[in-house]
Image 1 (tube, rainbow, N blue to C red):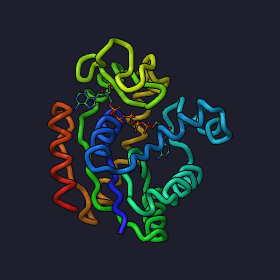
Image 2 (cartoon, protein in one colour; image 1 turned 90 degrees about the vertical axis):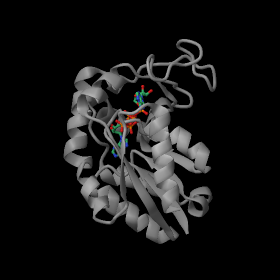
Image 3 (cartoon, protein in one colour; image 1 turned 135 degrees about the horizontal axis):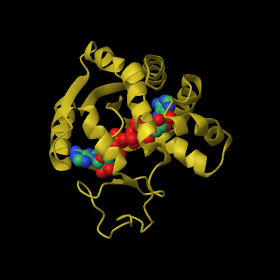
Length: 219
Ligand code: AP5
C-alpha cells in the first residue's frame, strides 16, 4: 500500500525546506500545491490565471479546483505505487475528506501527519526574509539558510526572487486564513492518531532529525 505523508504547518513553518530534505532521505515524490500553482502562473495556464487572484491576496484557491488538481497528480503511476510527501495539501476539512477518498480509490493511506509548530511572530520574520528559487522552488534565508553564492540558487544557478505573497499585509492574511481554515486539521488528524508535533523553532537540521525519527517510527 502506497504511503502518503501530510506535512502540516502555518505559512513559513518550514514545510518546503523540510520537504526537500525528507523527500531525498525517504526517496519520496514531493507534491507542493503552492509550487504547482506558481508553475501554472508562470506558464499562464487557465489554472494559473484562476489561482493568481487568490494567491496574491493570500486567500485559498477554491477546494474543487485544488482537489481536482491533486487528484490528477496523485493518480499518476509514480505516486500510485510509491506514495508521496504532500506539502500544503490538504488545507481545509473539505480537502482532507477529498484526500481520504482519493487514497481509497488508489489503495493508498496517510502514514502520518507531521505538524511543524512555529509561533506567528517567528513566521513573519522568516517570510519577510525568504528568497526563493523561481526554477526549483528551494527556499533560502540570509540567516538560517543562506545560499553558497549570495542571490543565486545552489541547485541550478538561477537568480533568487522574493515571492509576491511575502509582503507584510499578505503574510498577515495568510496566517489568519491558516488559523481559520487549516488549523482545524490538527484536531482532525489527532483524532485519527496520525498527528506528530515537531518543534519548528529549532534549527533546520534538528527539525529534520525530529521529523525523520517520527516518520520512520511509523514505517
Ligand atoms: P504555499 O506555497 O503552500 O505557501 P504556504 O503554505 O503559505 O507555505 P510557505 O511556502 O510560505 O512556507 P513553508 O512552510 O513552506 O516555509 P519555507 O520552508 O519556505 O501556498 C501559497 C498559496 O497557494 C496559498 O496562499 C494559496 O493561495 C495557494 N494554495 C497552495 N496550496 C493550496 C491548497 N491546498 N488549497 C488552496 N490554496 C492553496 O520556510 C520559510 C522561510 O523560513 C525560508 O526562508 C526558510 O529558509 C526559513 N526556514 C525554514 N525552516 C527554518 C528553521 N527551522 N529555522 C529558521 N529558518 C527557517
